Length: 105
Image 1 (cartoon, one colour):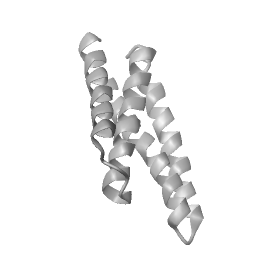
Image 2 (tube, helix red, strand yellow; image 1 turned 90 degrees about the vertical axis):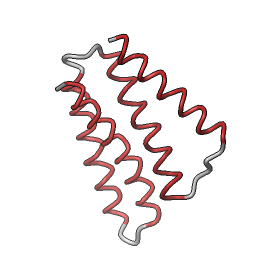
Image 3 (cartoon, helix red, strand yellow; image 1 turned 45 degrees about the horizontal axis):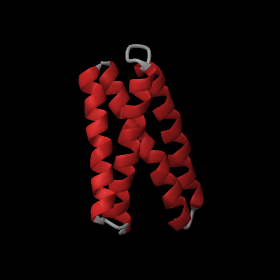
Image 4 (cartoon, one colour; image 1 turned 180 degrees about the vertical axis):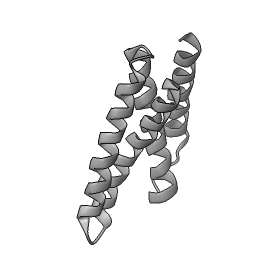
């Protein structure tokens, strides 16, 4: 169950970055900021629950990896960010590292 909490926490980690980006583009900026604050709180709470069963080093790397790679993909698909080879290759290395930590756990 801890891994499910950790994955959900990583997804909410993406939500706060998305909320900050949306607050730039929305007419009513408070909705983007609210999304960011709620996502950040849920993300940290879920990390807190997960790290009670998963070593904190592993939990933190997985949590930030999901957030980082997920936010990169959101930027590419929703905001037209660059999808260059080196960006995707580097994101792939993060994913490989996260998988390696899961296997080594």
